[in-house]
Structures are given as structure tokens and as C-alpha cells.
Image: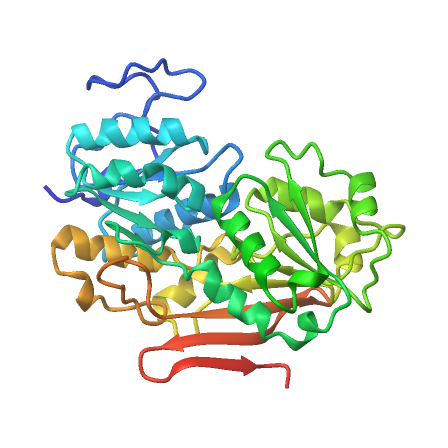
Length: 378
């Protein structure tokens, strides 16, 4: 039975334990999964709370729900909060798999995706869709589609950026314990030009070492004229805390955010402090559909740029059409047949200038023209 609009209502499902067998795990500190909607093959397991990619996954949820209401192109599915917890995510995978679900959307962090790889390998009929995981270590055979280009491709743009390469010192602020950020650290250290200039600072999972005094010590002697910082913080609250630590007495150097999240939101002081000093790589494509642009215009900062491609991929899988025939809403959607990683993409570097995000650099990988680099500022 296919889901109808009545199944996608704004009514919240009860968090009481469902009547189905549930793994031997008490509900606290997590809620028991909602009672499943009695149709469909897909479930989304998103990090809506906790110390994960909470901003990104909440935007994903908002954008999914917008398109469920706005168009009948996509069959609605249920969305469940994993609380950014790997063990709980696996319990939810087991629970929904045992009651018939076979397509699982989520795992936006590479560390979470790494943690569920063996689960998918043991169940070849289960299919994963990861909207955001980017670790190069996951460029391996798997039954999980990844819709965001790998970090090694983003690093290529760093390694050819003349401004960054000519800095006296290059700082790297990153989330500690994440596979993607650690691999980026290793790649930066190994680079012949960047490595000797690199100074790295890992931010603890609890952000206990993310204080103004500690950052002042780390950045001692750095100047906006001579130095630059590469920023890779997964936790949205960590990024906000980091940004808000700077002030008139502790001013930032140019920062390049490679987390591929949405733009940060600055407070009134930050709008002044960070003017022309914050640049963010975003997965915004050069060719998009009317439906994509309508959603972005409506939801604005709450819009998730990969959500439509996730929805279209899922619909093809549900309808058994085949992923080689996907009609795209944002650039070309095509996957490596072995790794299931996206093959083509366009990434844009936006710079924060006078309260606006201005495109400055465009990096495209196209099936016909190959890799194309545009310096939009020139």
C-alpha cells in the first residue's frame, strides 16, 4: 500500500512503546521509536537532538515535510530522532528492519555511517541513503548511497587556493573524534606546502576546551593580514560557540568553513566582527529545478540543499525504477556502481560581506567537461 497524504499529518505519534518486539533496551534516556506508519518501505533516522549534525538534519526534516505537502511527487515517510547516538541508531535500524523497512535515510556524519557499515553488510537487502557523510575512508564498496562529495574533493580546492597557500600560518579547528575531520587533518599535515605551516586544535566532544582564553592562546600572534584558519566543526552548537567567542578585543582571522553545512547565523556583534572574514563551502548546485528554487525561496535558511535529491533517489528505489534513470532537481545525480558515492557535483564558496553571502568560487565536476574551476570574483 502506498502512503497517502493522510498518513503525513502534523499529528505527532505517541512516544509510548510500540506493540512490536523492541530490542532489550529501556526507553530512557531515549524515547521509544514512534508507532510506525503502516505503509511504505522507508524510514528516516535523523540527528534532531544531541551532539551531532543537528542543524543539518533538522533542515533535512523541515525540507522533507515541506515537499510532502507541496507536491505529490514523493511518497511521505516517517522521521525518527536518533539523538545523535550510534548505539541507539543501531537499535532503531534493527527495530524497523524487523518490521519490514528496507530503505534507511540518515547517517549524515561519517563516524555514524562507519558505525553502521557492518549492520548493512550483514543485511544486503537493506539500502542506506546518507545525505552528508564525506569521509574519504568511506569511498569503499557498500550499499549506502552518499549524496555529498568526499572531503578529499573539497581539499583539492584548498590546495589550489592561492590565498590560503601563501599564508604565513594555516590554522585548523576541528571536531575531535570524527573520522572525517581526522582524515582531513592527516591530509593537511601530509601536504608539502600546508603541512609545515599547519597548527591544529581539536575541539572536545563536550566543547570543554572551546573557550576564549584557550583560543587566544592557540591564535597568539595570528593576524588577519598574514594567516588563515580552516574550520571543520560538525556540531552546530560547537560552531556557534566558536563564532560567538570573538569580539572587539579578540578579532578573528579569515576562516574557511569546509563542513558543507548551512551558513552560520551571526549575532549583532558577529555581523561586524566577521565581515569579510568568514567563507563557507556549501553544496549548492549550478543547475536546479523550479521546484528546488521554490523550496529554497520559501524556507530560506531552513532549506536543505540536498533534500530533493534524497527524495528523488528514495522514490526511485521505492518504485524500483533504478538509480541510473534519476531525473535531477539539483545538478546531475549519478552514483559509482561500486561505492554508491555521488560522481558529479558542484560546490560553491560563499563569503560573508556586508550582511550577505557572496559567491566567490565555484568547483564543478561534470560528466562531459570534467572538473571546472571558476573564480567568480574575477
